[in-house]
Image (cartoon, rainbow, N blue to C red; front, side, top):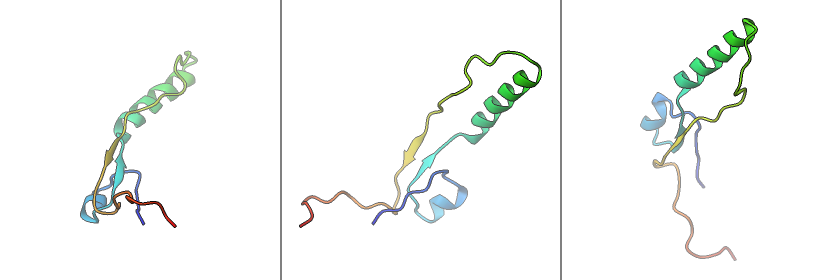
Length: 70
C-alpha cells in the first residue's frame, strides 16, 4: 500500500510522506490579483490557471509490482 499527500507540509518530510509540492504563495497572489480586478470592474482574461507541481517521492510509497496479481 502507498500513501500520498498533496501539500508537502513541514511534517511531510519528517514523516517520509510522498507528496505533491505546490506553490501556495504564488497561487494566492494570482487569486488576489484576479479578485481585485473583478472588484474594480476590470476584465480577467485568464479566469482559470494551472500552476506547476513537483512530486516528492519519499518512504510512504512502494515500488510497482513486477508480477501481476493472481
